[in-house]
Image (cartoon, rainbow, N blue to C red; front, side, top):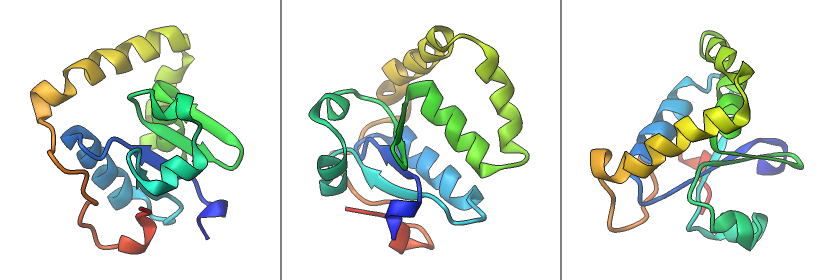
Length: 131
């Protein structure tokens, strides 16, 4: 079933990533997203080792793979109005938007904390969460 839906891979140990997954899940009115931790078996089966070694959000949509800021912008676009309006920042060069993404990523564990165990978020629609 998830083959036809985008899969958002996230760091299962990162609190900010859990907040982001909750944000997307609650605003995904069409229920198009599936979610999977980068440390899980779904990621191991669908992503290359090179991608698994990158400490970032990854969006797999069909045969298209988006990472860092491109993944974030694609998620916002798929969420629709009003979130897709933030894609106006996608006009900046990817080098610049990835720099901003990386600046937040470097500080995320210090600011939001880190989980000892990779756990699945507790949300209203558990079927959309892959191992």
